[in-house]
Length: 140
Length: 126
Image (cartoon, rainbow over all chains, first blue to last red; front, top):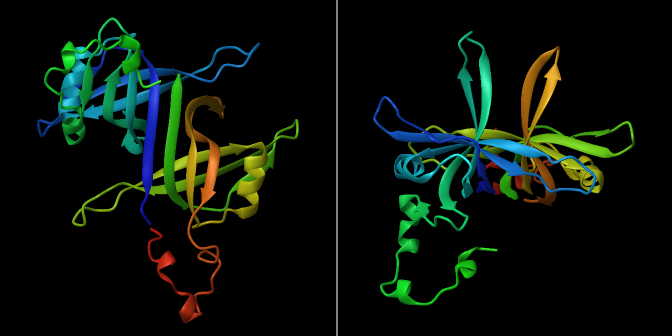
């Protein structure tokens, strides 16, 4: 049975990405994202704070361009990971491993993508000269 | 904002169907989702908690069984709670869609019947 694990999130960064290197020298970026829940009238606003992890080239891009408060779209998979805390107790962490990150918002338009999907985003020469309305580039 | 997840996996046990004090049905279960891996690598699995409410909860409670492959659509929710005075965080996918996959008899078939030993069961990771 082929399994599927895919999630799309839109939200704001709660902190600047924390970019590090593993012992093997692989770059990894971590940050938290605040995703508003569907709002009902008369109900208090609720949010989910979701941990995001990005690896390699995508981690590099996160470190360079993402800042606290930025609106981003993250596409990836849900991962559940066990680790030991300082006291030696076994803990579980749930995080979204990003495959694509797209920056939203108008003040700075940037696009970041994992190498596997990079080809899709290849720009056609001369496309920049076309009078494209800003709004039409948003996916919704 | 937008929060939408799509998962396909197998139930690790039968769903737990309960009712809130106000009578709303809620079903909880866990699905095992294989990570994509090369043949040489060890198989890794994510066990993801699923919650369904109301009518969907009743359907899950009635039809889903351990081992059954399902497709779930929903949102990732992070919920703090307290257990024995200790603060904990529960991460779960709140389902707003569920689709049963595989053959209907794939889970309930008798192992003694050689004809029923189809390919459907071979892929169950446990």
